[in-house]
Amino acid sequence: MFYGEYAHNLDTKGRLILPAKFREAANQNSVSKFFVTRGLEACVFMFAEAEWRLYEQKFRDVPFTKQDSRTFNRMFFSGAMDVVPDKQGRFLLPSYLKDYAGIKDKSVLIGVSNRIEIWDQARWQEYYAKSSQLFEQTAENVLSL
Image (cartoon, rainbow, N blue to C red; front, top):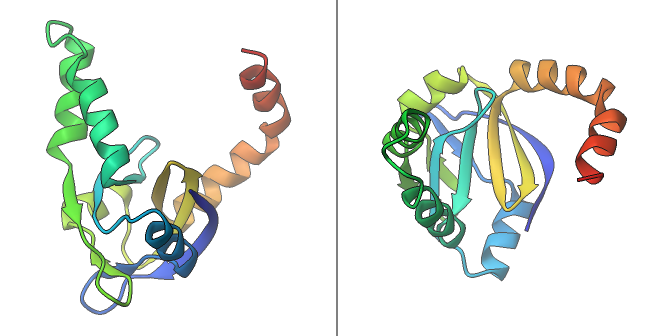
C-alpha cells in the first residue's frame, strides 16, 4: 500500500506532512487513522489502523512470561499513539518519538508496503549507504527462505 521515499521537514509547530502518494493510498483504502510507535534501527513505525490492530493482536498473544516478550511489548506499546492527519496531511509526531528517532528538522518517510517508516534524514542516508551495499546478498538470503 505504501511505497517510495519522501523527504519532509518538520513545520514550525513540529508537524510532519504525510506525502501525497501516501495520502492517496490511505484514501483508496479508507484509512483515516494511523498509529505511530518506536520502530527498529531508531526509526518510527507508522501503521494504518487496521494493520496496527493485526500487530496488536499478534503481540498480545506473545507469552508475557518471557523477558524478551515483555521488554518488546513495553517498548512497542508504551511508545504508541494514534494520529489523524489533517486535510493537508499534517500530523503531530510526539516529541518522545522524535527524540527516539533523532528527528530535529529534516526527515524521510519511506513506504515499506504495510507500514511507513519515519527517519531522521541523516540517519536514513547513513543506513541506506550501508544497506545498499549488501542489498544483493540480503535479497539472496531472504528470498531463499
